[in-house]
Amino acid sequence: MRHSVGIVHRLPGWLLVFVGLTSAGIAASLSPDPLSSLRPGHPRLLATAADFAALSGRAGQDPLLAATLDHVRQQAELFVAVPVVEYKLVGPRLLDQSRAALNRILTCALAFRLTGDARFRDRAVKEMLTAAAFRDWNPSHFLDVAEMSTALALGYDWLYADLTAGERGAVKQALLDKALSFAPAAYAKGGPTDKRLWFATRVNNWNQVCNGGLLAAALALADEEPALARTVIAGVCVSLPRAVTAYDPDGAYPEGPGYWDYGTTYNVLALAMLDSALGTRFDLDRSPAFQRTALYRLAVQGPTGLGFNYADGGAGMGASPAFTWLAQRFGPPAALAHSRALLADDVKKKVNARGGDRFFALHALWFPAVAKNPNDASSETPLDFHFRGPADIVLLRSAWGDPRALFVGFKAGDNSANHSHLDLGSFVLDADGVRWAADLGPDDYNLPAYFGAQRWTYFRLNNRSHNTLTPGHALQNAKAVAPIVSFGSTPNRAFAVADLTPAYPGAAKRMLRGLTLLDRARVLVQDDIAGLKSGTSLRWTMVTTAKIALSADGRTATLTEKGRTLRAEILAPANGPKFSVDSTRPPTSAENPNTGTTLLAIDTIPSSADSRLAVLLTPVGDRWPANLPPPELTPFPAR
Image (cartoon, rainbow, N blue to C red; front, side, top):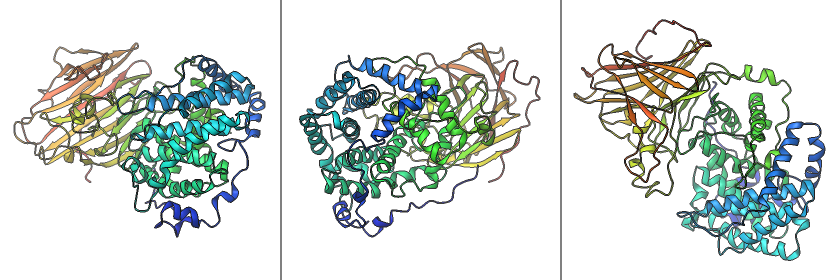
């Protein structure tokens, strides 16, 4: 892929001279006043009354939109009968309740606007008034405030004409007291003056979510509380660009595709709300890396439908309204076609009382219309990508549009990135519709010191549970940066090499791991080690859900799942190391037991300081070439 150049975000012209002031000072000095273009009346966040009214007519021209709206109505019917949210913390978080409120309010408010059924309005209002009466929205974990603020702000805006004066007053006061009251401290000169508001200066999903939540409230109340709205708009225009640098330089997200969906959805919400309410995005979407991130979202999902779930994220990836919004504006065409296909799958899923994606209603507003040339979209997209950044990743595949295609995700980069695991050198592998090499994902965030001193003791989070190479029993250095040092792509072959030496300080003079997609039909995992300390063992691991059968000599492992087969062969060294099958059970009962998975492993003590361990992974079956010669093992290209 063509790499992006270094990116400097351009602040809006009206803001440049005010960066050194407090947000209140910025707001007071705006010229022209950003609220001079405020759309009068309600709704003005994400859609207007005319936009909502047009949905049913548009649905008559597109069966997928009709199915999407019907899915919203079905979900609203179930939400009518469930208990309202309650003030209930799980660990330090109210987040589950904030997200439930957002799901129910968005869904029921949209269902009311589509149908006029007062039950849906009443249910949304009941949820809003219940949350408004909470003593607070748990500002010690400000994500909880942000999501609840988003919920009530959008409900207030979308239902404004159908709320009583008392209902409006209660919701407005809650937004002021429980969310917007924190804005002056969040956007203060020199940084937040309240330690709970650290998000404003960070480069991660917290920045995007919390800025988005405060902005939703500010824009919903902008005509009633203009000074506060100006403070928030100015603060967001200074703070949000910090988070956008996370996508530099190529559009990848350091926290993995799961958190990409979280942070990017709120980033897009902020942009879309500014656009709909004020008619401008203040150039907050000008980052070339941000404009490329839909390509990352497209490429990071394997043909099985599972994502390359590095960091604290699960592998599941469904439809994303933010993905559609980005693809519509910045491309590529294949991203929009893929977003439509994902939505077509999601609308077939049965609704349940718990609810699915809390942002599902936004699919109606940011709907992926049919691409002009949908059949040509994937043919224009490269098969292989190297996305640089804190998560330095490579994605290789044999084909687009084939659920049985071969796919590899390969992880390098910075172990200190937010939500990172000790996973340098790890990979996932799809072929024949099966994920053969898996990432177990996160564990319970409420485990003791999950984000603190005990983080690397948890099995799912350290290198012992990842598909990588470990010298001795070492944990990877939590601050290590292991770069991709070589990447290449040709029609028949693609490869990447990561330098894992920094991951294990002092273990060896050099540790290089390379993954090569050979003939677009098999994967070579090659580890070249130089200067390994005498007597140090090496452990090669791969997590799988497949059944494993070992050959008599232990040099070949046959994996089977869903009637498909993958063969693993040790090519180097020629003699000695054998496969074994180990448990993925963690050391403590409090951790996820990882039921249904096993560990394919190789344990060896090299006979010399310089050694090579090479494993060939080959899908076997009618659609794959048979009797291919063993690949030639060669040193990695010089840096």
